[in-house]
Length: 213
Image 1 (spheres, rainbow, N blue to C red):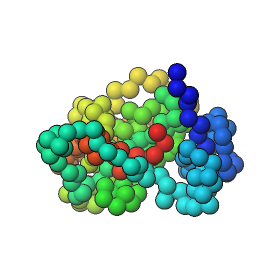
Image 2: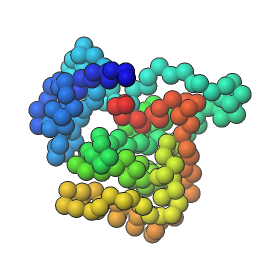
Image 3: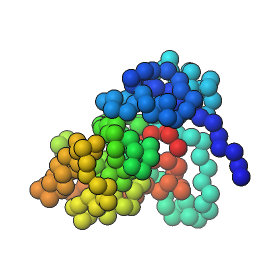
């Protein structure tokens, strides 16, 4: 059995800031902290460098990527359309601490972010990210479309419902308030925005990815 790689966690904003060697220690700093900023790194040196830098410069950084698809497959898929925004969610556990955001696909400039929420799932986050993106583009009268890497979230959008099995409780009450608002928005608004599946196998991680894999 291969040994799990050690990670170091940089916390820019939390109950305490700094570098933590255990996820549980990092989690304690970001739990119930509105607007927490954190990310994992493979070496202490990288984590230390990030700590004195800017959080926004580190989230969603593309890793070196080489597609395993054939030239024929890549040609068939083509390249991303940069007249778009990309959305994604990150959940530390299922359920666990969750947040989501939307970025400009080309520049990766962050357009909106919500969370972290103390208890959520990745699917809920992906769903909320798309609805937030739809409302954002409609508000700005934008013709751009939305990239997401979640087929489940796309199906929920089509059905205008959040088909999660996560039970409602006091811990996730605020999250479900947002879910209810999102479902209501879908049922009371029309939109022409096209939602497109991001081709991860061809292009690598979606630009909105939080970079915590």
